[in-house]
Length: 137
Image (cartoon, rainbow, N blue to C red; front, side, top):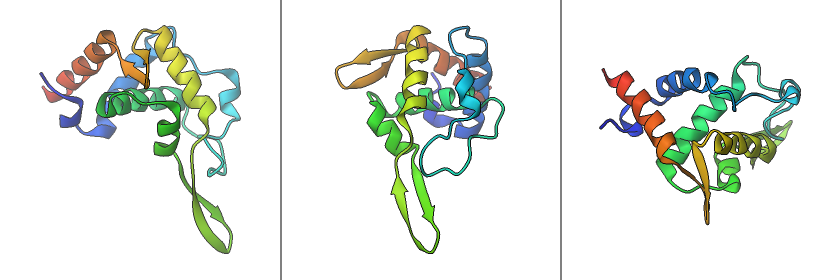
């Protein structure tokens, strides 16, 4: 069995993004075209399919870390906020996008709630393994 850790991350996310586009439950909301991903960003995402890329990245992150909550994901997707001539400071990402994505992934039965956050379901693990296996060939 091929693991998610054994394949290149960027290529894996690209392949998984294409699989997630086929799912009816995962759709970007209308406000996504205008929303920034956090206070450390200056502009909204410029990628057309940002919602699916972030969903694929979330699934990969959950499979690597195990149980994760929104706060840990906000820390992971955060970054430096530039403040002009003052030193840059670290900021966490916005939680709304992450929460909405996790809720959609729950409806698609790829992720389930646990006591300490969210974890992959067998269906989600099967999807990730099949994408990784297809890349290894």
